[in-house]
Length: 271
Image 1: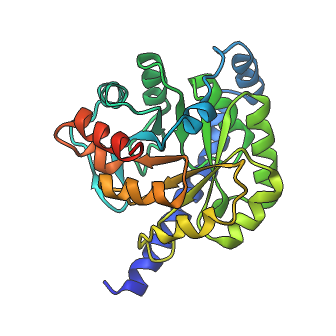
Image 2 (image 1 turned 30 degrees about the vertical axis):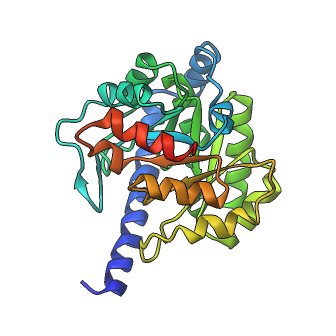
């Protein structure tokens, strides 16, 4: 498959994911009405401080529990998110990210619930969130932070969901891929921005993306480098770019020795 056709197919996958989630939302809301979720969120245990974990000295490791992806297929055949999260915690990670998309990443909200109960670290819900329902759903499941992807959200949605996350006590990790998305996000005065090193059109990874965008982000905003980090040297490159944290999934989840792999990433962020 040519690069052009591959990029087109990957763009189609993103469209398919969002279409699936938009079609699924009315069914979810019929099963558990928004009013019920709001009531449950009001009595949920208080969120842990995800932002403080990101801002801790050095480059913090946000380690991801990820079973599969549309492009790579099954990543971890014998997937146990609790075991994985505990290994990340033992290895020095400061926060955990949990994929909750079911159809395309084989994750569930139950995975997030189980991980949140098993570790003492703050937990991020990583999914394709676009409606307030999803944020209440995340808080009820125990999420301390949520991912908001600028590429799939309009300006109004970004503003509404960022404000709602604050009201619920959760951090909002707002993900951008380029200067245009960053320009849309900065007026929201976010506390936390994630820079995805992967081009959504070609899916090529370029760490220079993080360095380039970090220079445009005010220093009071914490920055997370995302995507394509495979080695401790990659973490060192992110540290040189001035990030506060890195989000690493596949490289850790595939490791034969998760604890020591996490320790190597952590050490690279503190040297």
